[in-house]
Image (cartoon, rainbow, N blue to C red):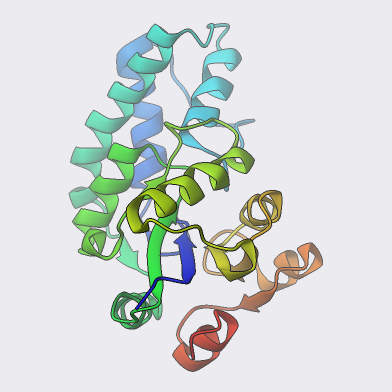
Length: 229
């Protein structure tokens, strides 16, 4: 069967919570690389890309976002993330495993990532929690620091993998922040919002996602919102 539905998942707050591993790795990695103590105050993290966060932190300390400084920031972060993940009590979020398993076994569906994580960071997190194998490709912070630019990368990779273009109205972005909704709208996709991150149902509702859930545990309802029930 030809793939006709493209479903793109955010990671943090949507698939899993790392128990603070990511933020700790950002702080300690930056300090080890640059020697500055960083508490991430005045740094927007939820729904932002790692490359965008890096630019915020560097600017906060008067450092330019040169290729070399960004490389050092990423390396420091990723090294710390690898050691922090097993030291934290993170978990997969409600409903995610049965949802991924159902979608992976649905012939018309292609599963990908649209995430603010760096590609290596995404792989570290998803492998640690045992769900990396569900995803065929992704769009990442390596591609662009502006999350709203990532949709075109995801669509291009889906087309490259399957040899056919996906229609925006059959493309879904599942995420836990208003930025995920805005990102979906930026390339004409449908937005499925879930309040398992740092935004409540009440905070997400004004952004008018196509569907909104407290969590993803009602499999039938989530599948209906994705048009694959």
